[in-house]
Every structure is written in structure tokens, then in C-alpha cells.
Amino acid sequence: ALKETNGNMDEAVEYLRKNGQAKAEKKAGRIAAEGLCKVVTDGDKTAAVVEVNSETDFVAKNEKFVNLVNKIAELIVKNDVKTMEEAMSLSTEEGTLNDTIVNFTATIGEKISFRRFARLSKTDSQNFGSYIHMGGRIAVLTLLEGADEETAKDVSMHAAAMRPSYVKREDVPAEEVERETSVLKEQAMNEGKPAEIAEKMVNGRINKFYKEICLEEQDFVKDSDMTVGAFVKSKNGSIVNMVRFEVGEGIEKKEENFAEEVMNQIKG
Image (cartoon, rainbow, N blue to C red):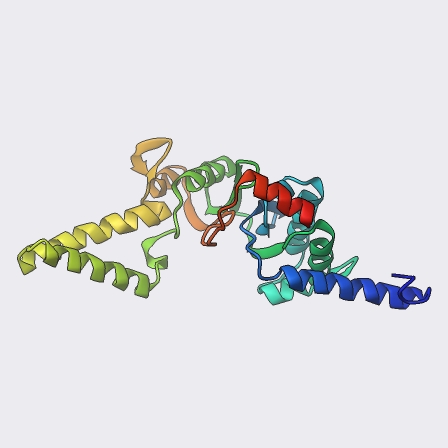
């Protein structure tokens, strides 16, 4: 860089920044569906969960990548940001968080993507519970009112295993319920059921739908005789919030074999 800028240090820094940006833009179209999720707390009042993606599992296990994920998580938990735009504008040693990720992408040779985050705050009567599964493939952060931290962790472990999308049925968007109801009605009609019977079938099946996707209504993994909601209630608590991140969920992954991953690493 100094050679390209005739020894001018300021221009050399700018040259490196532009070069890193160019490399990052070149990799922007690639699919980054591997990576890590991380949960961190800041003191006793705030917790955050993040997902940072890489293209390959090789990079996801790289110490430098792990450190980057930790750095991002700490940055998020310590700053009251609500949008990804705000998060990417946070100050770092490289300038902004966006600059840090661009530089890391250029250095590591893969597309690196800070995909999402959630940041929760608690009161004195509430407790966080967190659980990391498979070294960061799944991360869950739970917030309970009244119940203790051990109960909150049990709920997080359950959520990691059973993949709830919402805490309670009131949280499910109306359009999602309408879409599911429409499908169930069509199924009942195709089965040739009378209208009255079909309506009862739809009501029964929509309750099953809620039971599958709502944390409170799922059968508790440690005791299937009670729901998660009943378990928390037995501990004098209620579920306030739950965030579950799984690496790469919803991203269409490209099939690659081991040899191709190695070659991609070599080629950068």
C-alpha cells in the first residue's frame, strides 16, 4: 500500500480501506450460511444474542472468526441499538463495525455477514436464561418474570430442542394464522367432510398448529405431562420473551463437498 501511494501513510490507509471494500463487494453475492451464534450479558440488566455468518465451517471454527463474533456480541450488548443500520455504524478500532467486517472479509477470503441480533433488558424481578448448543450452532436467550435463572435456562434448553417460533399464540401474526386456517379448510374439504365436521376439524388442527410453534403450549421436554407454560407457572413465573437463533436457518444453502471447500479456501 505504501508503494502504491509513494510512502504517504494516510493515502496508504485509504488505499487499504478501498481495497478491502472492493474485495468484500466481490464476495457479496456468495452464500454465507455457516457461522456462529453467541449470547452475552452486560452486568445484570442487559443481554444480547447475535448471529454472524461465514461461507464455510472451516472459517466458523477459526479463532479469529470466533473472536470477531465475541467482539460483535460485546459491542451490541453495550450499546442501545435497535436496527442493523445503527449496529453497523457503531465505532470500532477500524472505524465502524461495517469497516471491521469489510476488513475481516478481505483478510479471511470469505464473505462474512453480521446477519441479525436481539437485545433484551430486564427488571429486578426478572431473570435471563441462556443456552448454547453445538458450540454456537444454536443460541437461545429467554427472559422470565418471577422464576429463577435455572428455570429460565431449562426453558432455553427446551427451545433449542423444540424450535418454537413464538412465546404464545397471541404473538403469531394474523396473516400466518389465516394462511394456515385456509390450508386446513382446504384439506378438510378435500377429505369430503360435511361443513360442520370440517369446521371442528379445522379448530382442532389449528390448536395443534399453535401447540407446535408456541413455546408456552409445547410439551416440556423434561416432563411431557406438562406444557412449558405450566412448568414456568409451577416455578411462580411467566415467560416474557424468547429469542432463538440457529445458524443459517432460512438461508438457501449451496451444496459443496469437502474437496471443493478446501479448494475454495486455497483460491481465497
